[in-house]
Amino acid sequence: MNELLKKSAAEQSKALKNKEISAVELTTAAFDRIAEVDDKLGAFNSLTKETALETAKKVDEKIAKGEELPLLAGIPLALKDNMNLVGSKTTASSKILENFVSPFNATVTEKLLNNLVPIVGKANLDEFAMGSSNENSAFKKVHNPWDLNKVPGGSSGGSAASVSACEATLALGSDTGGSIRLPASFCGIVGMKPTYGRVSRYGLIAFASSLDQIGPFARTVEDAANLLEVISGHDPKDSTSLNLPVEHYAADLNKSLKGRKIGIIKDLMTEGLEEDVEKAIQNAIDTYKSLGAEVVEISLPHLKYSIGIYYILATAECSSNLARFDGVKYGYRTPDAKNLMEMYTKTRAEGFGPEVKRRIMLGTYALSSGYYDAYYKKAQQMRALVTKDFVEAFQKVDALISPTCPNTAFELGAKASDPLQMYLTDIATISANLAGIPGMSIPAGFDKSGMPIGLQILAPQLKERDLFNVAYQFEQSHDYYKKLANL
Ligand code: GLN
Image (cartoon, rainbow, N blue to C red; front, side, top):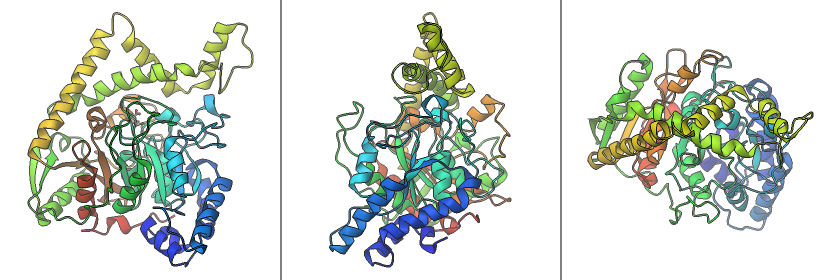
């Protein structure tokens, strides 16, 4: 592997500007790495070589002319395969979209292309972003670069694995209940979910629209902050997009934490926590104390309901969002239907995988007359209480910390036949989506078998700069982020 691929985007940018390597060479090196390891990893559904090299060429032309480069120009990036890129297949890892070619660009894609970021391929995911292990892809499983017998986490497993294995330096994922933070934690990298509305959802295949948010993967906090700067901003094409200026999210990375208050979420430090994970979080607490912050215990009394709330709201929203996949306009259509109704039912029965069907059924049930008040409405009311817990907590502290997951990456197949066990994996991440607050996972050590442990940091809405600051101060106090999977 070209040694430069192991470096951060910031370092790669410098190398490009200093003409140590050209953008075409760097992008080609990424494709060589993909050719070397992706048969083992399964991180990519498809490669977009032409687009990537075309973009890289433009970067080199700018460099040759001595022009200023936009942020992250020339840095190889993997796009989760539920975001549209013109001319590429956008499958959401579902059979129903297996041959769907994007006729338009997602807003994030447009922004990446404007900044001349080469998009190397479409990253594998759990079908329609539903899952925590990436085993729900209709095409192939993604393997964890640290141990190929283990899951990379989901649903953005391909995005996380590609960055962890240095196939790409950056990636985008989507996070509805933890799908960026969980795989970041399992793969030992940085993953960040912005405030709901920071990043446009236009061109992202919708799962649960009131929870979905696109965010960055990187190997350093600084790179993640810069990638968020590239993709965020108001978009009239998404009615929930916030009309706020784009910030320089890396502006406060070096700010001292002296006198700041950090809350440790007590409710997530209870039974079920693996011993090594608990130790890593204790180490994080000590680190923050030594950096001059005051660390206090915070209780979020409604957090224990968050999985129940999420699996009513997310499934209700998905049952509505996925109604459009009916074989009429695009995507898979059953070849042998006798009439229209049979065409609908057969198309959906053959096109969707078991987890997607389970969710559509659960959500349809929760929304049906007679049950709506008992389930959907109750869940909405409870969502407000979870949000209130955070509002109250952030009156006392500047940021909250917890494990990203009570355990490290598990064996492939270990939870695949038990949906409830799989759902419980997201206990620490889901509440941030319910409350719309920004959160991230950063490398915080390793367990006895060498698997990465993630530290989750949460901040109040729109306080991304503080979030990156708190993350960066921890990151720079240790070498965890420097260790790469040996693949
Ligand atoms: N694991 C959760 C689920 O299966 C979250 C997925 C996500 O954030 N997209 O729904």
